[in-house]
Length: 187
Image (tube, rainbow, N blue to C red; front, top):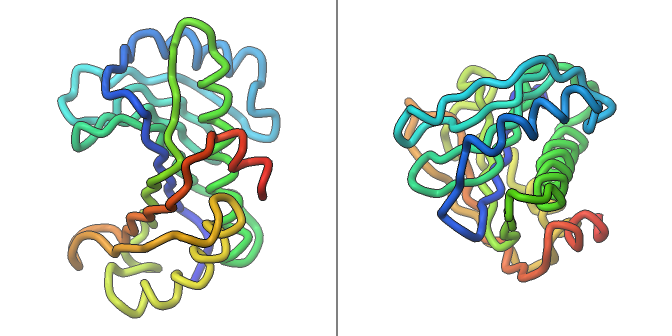
């Protein structure tokens, strides 16, 4: 299995998000190279789309969304390309990048974002390499267990979501009550 096209979504604690405030923040991230090891290119505003992608920071390797799908706003990290390493390293990297972006957003004055660490969504946006079936779940589960244990502790539970026509997705109830900064410090 090729460790690319991973997505990690970390949910906000509050459902009230003012998406338009993110646009200048993401433009600043591009100008100031807030994510130094990625080429950030542009910002796209999809706030007008109900249950949509919200505001997107578009990069060469990855995109960062303030996603509002399913009435559950959160930071969605989406790797498109550019990772060399095994499955475990790829999953660890995706979680680390998602949590670092959450930490950056929490530090932005005027946004008032706070992210929860008790639930995380993991997806693979590649139905050819990772079909949404039990065999894929069994192949990914040990790596997901190691990653969640490293970031959040050992009390996680996993639930495979969707059907065969949807991307492979796992809802992870981490059992963690700590902050994003604490999760990053653990791993």
